[in-house]
Image (tube, rainbow, N blue to C red):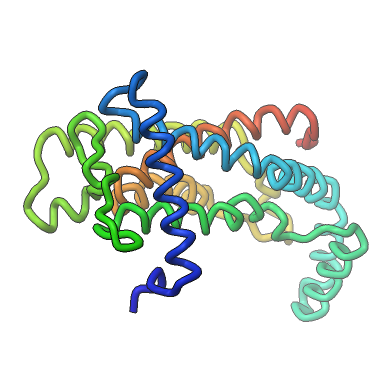
Length: 246
């Protein structure tokens, strides 16, 4: 069953479609054939601007975690042989500080519905009983509703599609690598009781967005590219406002 057949979700989908089409027509005299792609970029910037409070919350959470790190290490030393007590004491510490170890996930969770709607808009050939004209929009000749994995599976991938996706994925991966290097998580000493997170796993997590871009429509991939660029710039600005002591 298509969840967007539910009246409320169908109305949201139609509203998103109408908004994108209206913005596309508005930008067409300036951007021409790339107007829909530019519209997606503007929508992404608008969404991220609305989510600035969650970005601030994330920066404050990172600062708080850095400040609590010595106390967390002490808890690790004291209760290392009692995992249940360690968990209780750790969560109590976060409660006393009025924060959460999951506070940094807010921007990702807040964006999930937006990405889902954008994904759905470019998957449905018919929206609210009318043809989805956005599927006719392209970027460099590649339809915005095309996914690289889908095109490969259907045997319709061509050189242009491959090149556009190569640029998209490379750009996302590059920004992810810059973000990883600039905001590298400090690892505890080798003799510390605090378990460290393997840097290889962190690298995989940073490149996950580039992998996702291979599976979603090009329109959603553009959203991901703009949002990772915004995230990098926003984190640099907020890190200066809420510094984290190394």
